[in-house]
Length: 310
Length: 249
Ligand SMILES: Nc1ncnc2c1ncn2[C@@H]1O[C@H](COP(=O)(O)OP(=O)(O)OP(=O)(O)O)[C@@H](O)[C@H]1O
Ligand SMILES: [Mg+2]
Image 1 (cartoon, chains in turn brown, blue):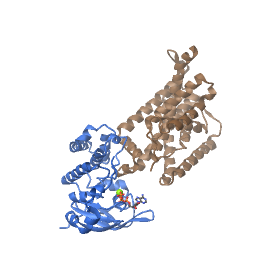
Image 2: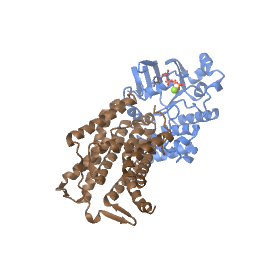
Image 3: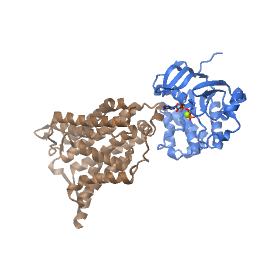
Image 4: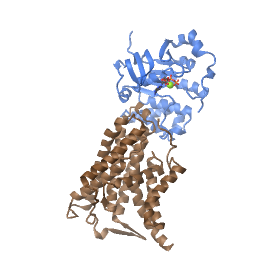
């Protein structure tokens, strides 16, 4: 028990880190589902590409595993460029794999997404190989500040950065969705696409915007996890995609606040589980939650009643 | 004196896939008029409105807006030319506030200060909406939603306002109120093209009317003449207007 109390704050911090990342991934699923009513199976691969992009930027800016610039600048560049590249791939995916099927049966869209997922995985496998790429972070984060003591909790600077960036991005998104004209148009389109067009909203552009935002956040998550676990390979999108999807369903698919909440809860649940259970059970937690929520409350914590989209 | 119609249909044949729904439709609406299109269930009333909005496939014929042929153009362009709609079932955005719903009506406008003033005018016209300004659309009653849909449409400052069965789903008292509102909006200068099943109600405020039967216009005349027309009396006006539809919210 004593041990538990000592570990609890630590696991909460770990859970928050992981949860923020899951939330970022979940937002992409939920936004696309909200507007197109489809599960974008390729979203995990968008995340993976973000991870590789972050690694690539770090690699380009390093000599002998030492960064050649101010570390904060390097980290910022890694995240921003990863967001850009992922957004670009997301937009291409929408343009060439989904838009031509806008009026086709939903199942065709799903299959197309699955195809994109396999295609992107193999594309990266082809160019990067199956071996994991390693993020040499020790020069990014100097020894002297690597660990930060806050009372009973020890936070690595990396975790602190991950938490700060994820929550900053979520705050920016929330403000954008709530206050800006584009944000309102996005919500309107998600709630009633045809009526949105009757008000003069360019729905095609809104859909592109949704893919840009969702994919950029997924890409940021990819790089942040790369910093955290210091490696990336062509297959990381599968696991991350499942976690993000679970978080989105937990929060209520279609709901952005739901995705954020779902991600954080899932992250905390996983971290707390390893306090009680062997670490090997960590990944089972997500599936247990997924199954329970699908049985007990398929509409999720903050979701609307699920209704067939017309 | 030959004025240019705001809206004109010329020999329109419209289809859903391969199924023809409108047959050789001709009509026009002149500036300042309130024209109604009457017809029973599935006669093609909503399809006519969708045809104007570019949301339905036209095979033959032309739709003109202020003299410009618009069929084939994308919906957003047609809206930008000055068309607004109060659709069937109102289609309020359920998880957006009343204020946000109104703001979206002015989506294509960039004169923010003027829009703010006009939203205030809408609130003067419908005081209940001011009270509900920060409530979600889904929480409004049917009558309130109808007002909101009207306000939302007016905020685009339309050259022509399309209305699809404004009486649908409202209790008789609210129907009266609704038609007073439409009359008031028309009196203030908005050109209106309204689709209705409730013929006697619609004709009581309209200038002219067209009658649609299974996709064909079978009759058109001034509202007054239609109210006196024998065939109309028999088929659409017959004393039992309380038999209409019982759907309540
Ligand atoms: N999306 C569609 N696809 C195929 N057929 C349709 C579609 N929408 C309407 N129809 C058909 O077109 C015909 C006219 O429909 P429309 O909705 O225009 O009628 P309406 O006069 O508005 O009827 P109501 O009073 O019930 O609203 C009907 O037979 C209907 O079944
Ligand atoms: Mg109709």
